[in-house]
Amino acid sequence: MAAQVTDSNFEAEIIESKIPALVDFWAPWCGPCRAMGPVIDELAAEYDGQVRIVKMNVDENPGTPSKYGIRAIPTIILFKDGEVVEQVTGAVSKSSIQDMITKKALG
Image (cartoon, rainbow, N blue to C red; front, side):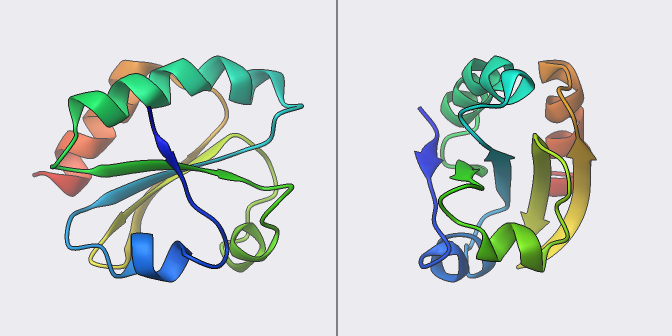
């Protein structure tokens, strides 16, 4: 199960993370976000220890999405060494997220 991050712990959990981090920006009312939920949870289990995979509820945490210019959800952002290395918006396949992680975070 992917952990939840908030505006208050985003810096410590994601920006200062020693391993790459993938953040799923979502909201409970968003159908495509709910569809992506199980995929994100599976990826969190698969990449445990290699990539930190978390979710952020944009309704409860408006500051961080605003900082990163998120206008649509779901948006997935991959961070490495505290920097954005890749971003995708909309429901995407598990394999496309795995490709992104392999090429941009672990490559």
